[in-house]
Length: 85
Image (cartoon, rainbow, N blue to C red; front, side):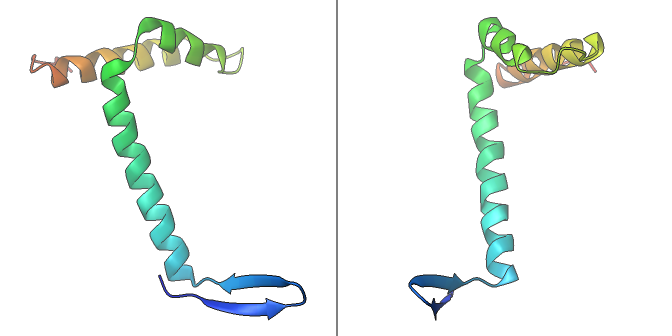
C-alpha cells in the first residue's frame, strides 16, 4: 500500500487510492469468511439461540430453519459425513 500524507491544518491525512481501499476490503472479506468457517465448528445451539435473539422480531420461521439446516450440513461436511441436499 503506497500512500502519501497531505498536511491539512493540524491534521495529517493520508492519501488513499481507490485500489488501496479495494485491497483492504478484499482482505477483510477474506478474513471474515475464513473466521466464519473456523467458528462454525464451535457453534452450539445456545450460540444459535443468542444469534436468533438479535434478528428482527418478525423474522420468518423459514429463515431460522434454513440457518439451522446450513449449520448442521457444514458440521456434517467437516466431519466427513455425506450431506444430502
